Image (cartoon, rainbow over all chains, first blue to last red; front, side, top):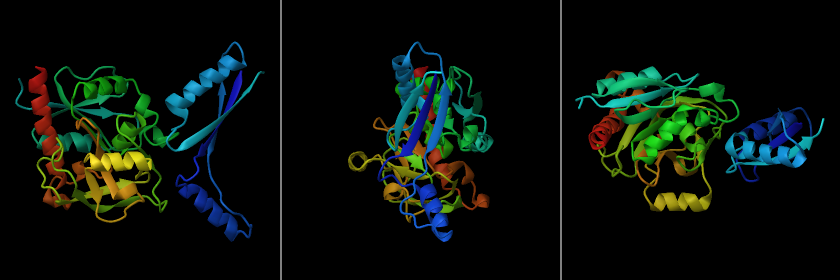
Length: 80
Length: 231
């Protein structure tokens, strides 16, 4: 089983990295608005089915992968 | 009973102020003991715990996140739950937040620059274990050196913490975008303090300031008291 976790800074949370990227894109001549930088985490895991895999990944997010105070997560599970 | 209380200084891969902290605590009358992050217990006579500064695990994922689930952290949590004094400095503050032993989180500095200089911090609450050698309103000169020092918490919690006197230390100016210029906070019980400035780098006038010694000496006092109570 393979899971992909998208971790994003929540709306309203300061993202200086995104702001720096936005500034550089604008200097390059791109007409961009807000830019936010998050992270992608690919996890291979053993699970009986998609529901079980998702439940496991949700626990991983709660315990380590994301900080709910500042980050939102989106989980995608693919059976291989 | 030893005259010098044991203070455990936890060493993580990437800690780099562990020896400075141990040296400074030794100079304040403590017996510092370095404890490895994979250990599952603290020395039996531990009177206080210090989580030192540095870049544990290269700040992977989020600063302090991986350290917050290191094997030793269960022992640190049990120690804190039993009322033992715990001080987190810089990276240690980040770990305490990630471990939910303190509220909030440390975000990248507003200016995106690593900040490395002396900072002025005001003691907002001189009634804690850690600040009782200071006067309320006293300004301390203590260096900061961090890239992720902007403390953040939701507004409701911020107001609650302010009301309860838990926002113990505040910068006298905006150093890194920290909410309310907060430099250090204490937990509700008052036995866990996290701060971004480095008191261990300010323990002698030769270093530019000895103000950090006020906080560390208070920690050593608290360690003595805790050791006695536990013995």
